Image 1: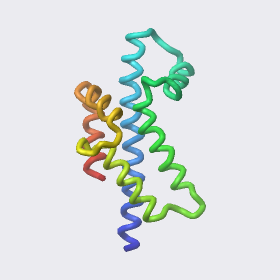
Image 2: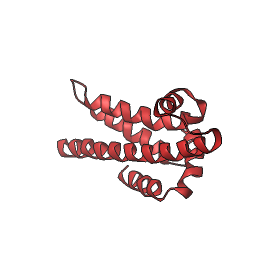
Image 3: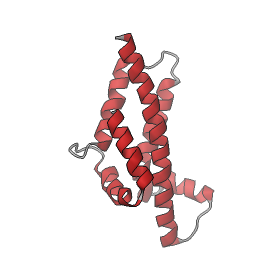
Image 4: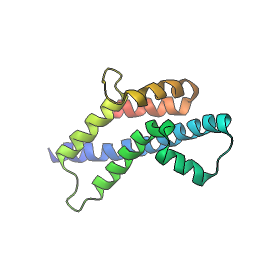
Length: 130
């Protein structure tokens, strides 16, 4: 059981890294779309938009997940099997189109993926790991 736990924990770290790269690709795509529509924004203004603008709420789905994973790995008590189960379920729901969770994220992702080969590759890798 320990090996399985350690294996799942290590795999979650790999998924987290892929989610981070996935988030960056999607963020760059949506920023480019935003700037085509409204003009170029400074990095500070873009960060403000990411944190508060409704247009970018779909990206916050991934960024908050990444932060929660990071915070869990930093816990003094360590990560539990139940926590791992929760993260795997959440990530599965995020990428499972049969799930009714995260609909707004999935709708926006459907617009992005045809234009982003790197995001499609990362999407497939994450799904395979979960």
